[in-house]
Image (cartoon, rainbow, N blue to C red; front, top):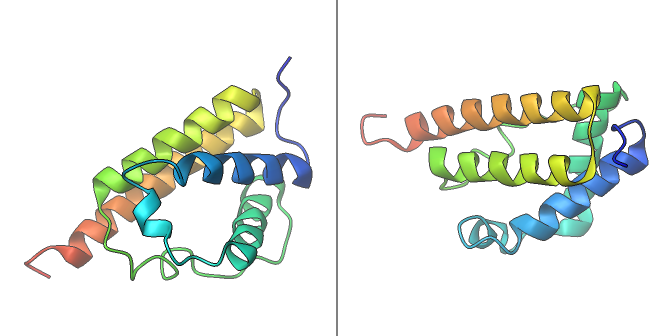
Length: 122
């Protein structure tokens, strides 16, 4: 039986399983080349700890950390799809639903901002 997301260990599971999938995805994997995962994964875990468990300490501007990437709406839509799959395969409940909602909101916002940044009119 699936449980809800309650602990930092649950967040670690989400992040680890998500990146296992994302790094195999033909659309997303190329954008992770050169990423130092020893540094990146703890940041992602801290972000989701902050967002879902109200653990203090995450202060990085998430969008600014990604602004250099040459990605758009389709990339973030795929990111959201994989994130949702990861949650649905492993968790269920209020926090799991909140995680999917937050990921959807982030994906849409980032996709829109990236399109504006990289459009010929900007």
